[in-house]
Image 1 (spheres, one colour):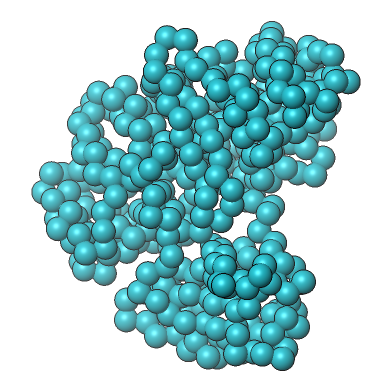
Image 2 (cartoon, rainbow, N blue to C red; image 1 turned 45 degrees about the vertical axis):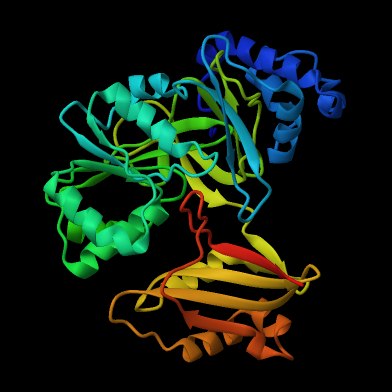
Length: 408
């Protein structure tokens, strides 16, 4: 029988007092109290699995009422989202829980020269979280933050001269760094470690990395602003497989969606069966570690409505990115009064490539039922075009697969 929790009952049950405390906190929130009225206690994993799940709007409601505060340090408030969905809020004490992460996952050591390339954007926590981890490692840190496209060449030369051994950032940002280095012939021979958090690992990033820094290996973290770091992986783990930390209880629902319960008594966010929207499964990692691992399949909320028809964004983007010469693609929906007026697929091409965009547009129209039906009478409203850069979140540097714009 496939387990549904990342911890066995004998390991989880003694620590469920944290879940009970979180439940008590949620019961004090007027807008959420009724949903927990029939759930008197949480003393077994079965009782925990019977609790309703939380989603981002529920958690935002709870946090607005609770206004968490750390007992022994300052309280940091962070925000994520806002580009393709409603903003999400999270709280953390000084240190960002990274001492617990560092105790079980140590990609950096004192000999490293680490580039923190997570943008220190407005109210985004990744840069500071990575800084706390690097501080615990005792390494030398270059707190680079956000870099404009025109600056890549000079900064890459600086990093090569400083003999950097490690860099960290979101895959969207790292991909820009290494694609530029590859295109301009810059090498980073001393780079051995690439830390990542915030998005799924990307195959093209791995290709560019192999050309620019053949000794480098990836080290990943999985989590969110609300849960903080749930799990980590090493170069010996598949990129989509993470080992949950002891303070994070992962559950797989009957629908295949993951939910997370934090068993850390110092956690400020009331994370109790919180769903990020990711699907996954519990598995055994080929790295050889005996503890359970979770394989993350990706988000289940990638289907959007285009003129009343469902369009799977991830599936369409994957099809486009298989096209020769296409490094990455992005879908942009232009809405008028909530209805899709136009749909553009933006192509970021590899240097020197010139994909036949008109052929690709016709093939996609013919092969995708939603597109052919939705744009049957105005096929010109569906466009495929190359761009110099995709639309990214100026605060975090993330590049979403889908961007929705409203026109008046």
